[in-house]
Amino acid sequence: MDTILITVDNKAPNKEIIEQAATILKNGGLVAFPTETVYGLGANGLDAAACKKIYEAKGRPSDNPLILHIAQKQALYEIVKCVPEKAEKLIDAFWPGPLTMIFEKKDCVPNEITGGHSTVAVRFPSHVVAQEIIKASALPIAAPSANSSGKPSPTKASHVIFDLEHKIDMIVDGGSAEVGLESTIVDVSGKIPMLLRPGAVTKEMIEEVIGQIEIDPTILSKPSSDVAPKAPGMKYTHYSPKADVILVQGDDISKVKQKIKELVKKDLQLGKKVGILATEQTKKDYDCGIVLSLGDRENLE
Image (cartoon, rainbow, N blue to C red; front, side, top):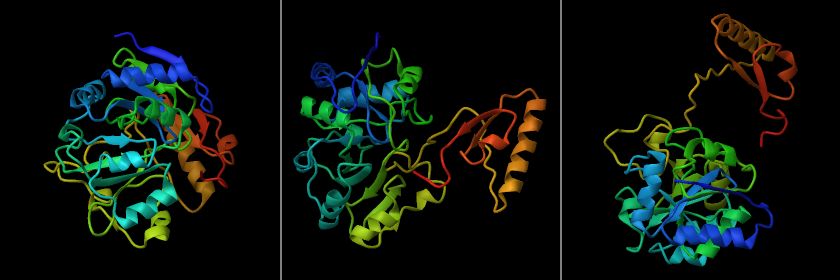
């Protein structure tokens, strides 16, 4: 398959390109596009056959649910049975944005995208390109991260190209994603909302709006292999790079830096290729390996 690669202005995307992407989606094809969290791999969320292509392209297990993306609040009521009061408060506080909520689904939502559950995950992204493509398609768009299943999520179009070129119809390059981590997921279908996947919208932020919530046990422990996950990221390996990753932590930054240098030196002597993820404050302290800065320690975002 030849994949169309096209670049758009992420603030004011070209309408013809948006329409081209929307037409592919309406015709059952796959389009990768930017959101504020990561790049998503979109398909018609009401078309089971189209969504099956997502699973095939990603190598994604069929019981791993997909998230439906909408671009106007009214679209939510067309695909879910009810919106609880606490969910309405979260919508007012965090939509559009990096929060996904799980609701009881209507029959129009195929079971194939929900992992067989009677619930569906829904999100309203804030990225202009994502919104315009969804609006132009006039559909809820199923869109997991646009990468091979289990691998690190793509934050640039080049990452999508590396994983999915020749497997999907189109890649819309709208620059780098802002958050870089997939959305927070909260189940609002029960009596007490439950956090299923952490993300940029934190537990503390949610509790400021609706009060105390529960945390799904699978966040803190290994989930059962024979239970179908209710949301993405709950059962299968997620965010897994090909390289070994070692986290060095401690209260004494000088000792941390010294330990990192020892580990790097040891691996370099073994002929390995080594990278160091540092901060703006510490990157100058390393004189070997490939040093990359995560940013400023005073700016966690």
